[in-house]
Length: 318
Image (cartoon, rainbow, N blue to C red; front, side, top):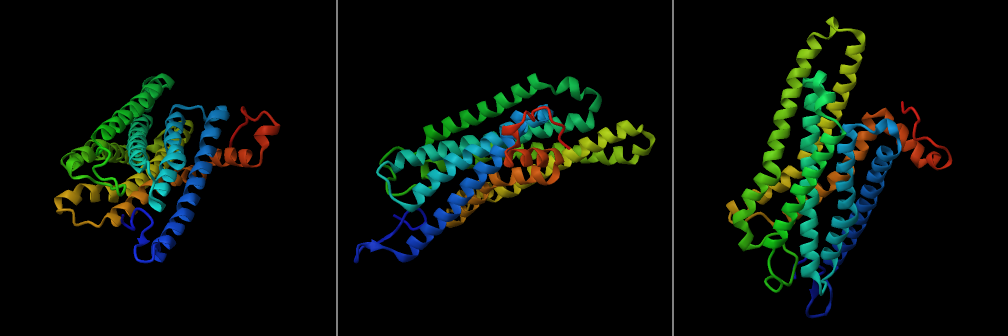
C-alpha cells in the first residue's frame, strides 16, 4: 500500500504512520467540506430552476442538467474517493471501479452539457431571429439526452476496460498498463474534441458580439436591451466554460503525457489535478449567484425559507 492512496502502517511497530494519518485527516476535512458545499450550492441551482417559472428557459434547463451532474460528483465521487484514500477496504476493487465509472460518466456529462450550452449561446447571439425556432424545450431535451447517453456509454466502456479483480488489489491506482494504449484516444474523444469545439464556438460568438457592438447605436432600444441581456448571459456562461476548462485541463494533459513521458509524472501530482477537477463542481453556483440577479433573488428566497411559506413560483425575479 502507498501513502498516496491509503493509510500506511509502520510494519515494525504495527501502528499507523503519523504523516499518513495526518494527511488522511486533512483529506477527510477538505473532502467532506467540498462535498457539503457542492451539495448545497447545486441544490440551490436545481431548486431555483425547477421551482421558479421565470427560470424555465432552454438555457437554464441545460444548466439544470449540468447542476445535476455536479451534485452527483459531490454526493458520490468525492465521498468514494475519501473512502478509498483513508482506509484499505476488502471491497476496494469494487469501490474503485464504481468510483472510476461514476467519475468518467459525470465528467463527460458536464463537458457535453457545456458544449450544448455553447451551441445554445451561438444561436442566441449569432442568429437571434432563428433562436426561438432552433432552440426550444424539445431540442434542449434531446441535447440533454445525448449528453447523458454519451457519458453513460463512456462510463460503461471505462468499466469494461478496468483491471480485473486481483490484478492490482493493494491500492486503487489511477492507471493500469493495459489501459494506457487507449488513454490519449480517450482523452481526445471525451475532453479534447468537445473542448476545442466550445473554444471555437465562443471565439465565433466573441467576433459576432464585437461586430454587433459597433452597430448597436443604429438599432432600436428594445433590440439593444435584448442584445445586452443575451450578451451578459453569454459572457457568464463563457466564464463557466472557462472555469471548467481551467479546472480539468491540467488533469487531462497530465493523463495524456503520463504514458508519453515513460510514466515519470508522480501519481500524487495527477491526483491533485483530479481533485482540482472535482472542485469545479463547486464553482458554478457561485458564478450564477454572482453574475445573475435573478439567481441571487431565487437563492435568497430559498435560504430564507420564503418558498415554503408563500407560493413564490410566479414571482418576478429581479
